[in-house]
Image (tube, rainbow, N blue to C red; front, side, top):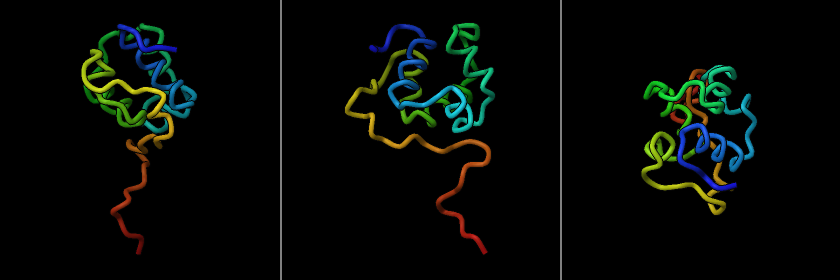
Length: 98
């Protein structure tokens, strides 16, 4: 699968490249599964910047690429990267448990 020219196509491409389900992406990004699904189907063509950034962080891709096709495009060589675990409930690697 190759990335294409719309946000929904790039999101689907990146999610599948990372071998993530919509549910796992929604959890990693701190979004609802419904929101991820609607963006992938093109029903939300212009999501908020914070939404795009959360998705980009969860997929370890550049937000500019995800939103507009600008910046670094993920490829098969990037597949092994662990997706970011940002968003509500994500563990802070710098925090200490008392």
